[in-house]
Length: 168
Image (cartoon, rainbow, N blue to C red; front, side, top):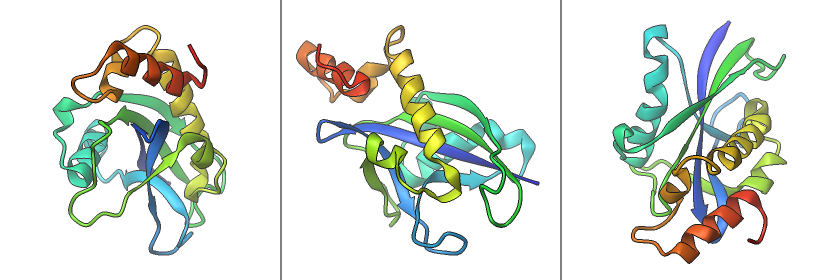
């Protein structure tokens, strides 16, 4: 059995809550979109992988991000190569965060990605991350991280509307 880390990187783009996804260029599941991720090669480094992904893909310091672990995802046959347990995490990134080092990242709206045929059955992780963010914005300041800097109260209110999918 293998273990991997999947990261749901959320950002507000074009007035929508979006998630960073990449298109697989190799088998298995070549051509499908997938979340950012990496295999776990050393158990003592598991919690560092989300930060490493953000640093390698976006050039951002992990210390500037907030990471939240969602849980373990072990759906049978999620990977055609064999059993894989995925440890799901999410983070929020600024609207101007862009990939570096030639990585081709697509920012896909949550509803589109949640219903897409993602590699490794990651749609559940997308839905769980968006729901957890929706709960967290109620009692933390995480919504501020989704705003441009500086921001107005109207812009902050709009972030809440986008995350919750309602007009306030």
